[in-house]
Image (cartoon, rainbow, N blue to C red; front, top):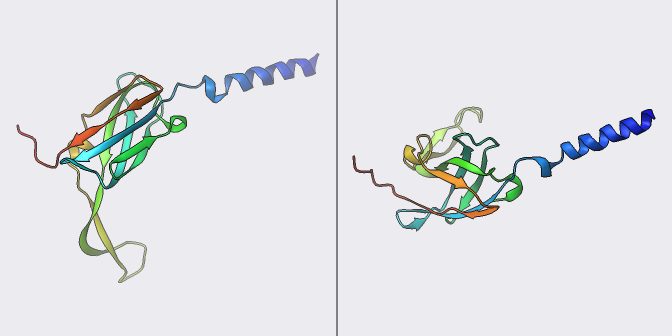
Length: 143
């Protein structure tokens, strides 16, 4: 009788702990253009907001394209979108921890803060597979 009880507890725990019982995740694919051209490289991050509960999701952007796989994708609901891109400045700088006199190429995050740290971009994830295309501009926005 004791063995049967433990077997039932194990089955219930296994069923309750399976990934299929977790929040429904979605695949998100899309394009990111900057001033009408594909973003050469960068990162996109989707963070749940407004009552949406779940993990943050993200992906690399290459030649303007990104794919957030469903198994690591966002849950259904609203998400704040952050997009970052880095480029070399053409200068060499000292990198702490690499030793004295060691210089590396300096990089800068060049997209305006309203696309990342202060982003107001929102994606409402509703489908199992969803497309999200966005056109960014480096020009300052009008007041």
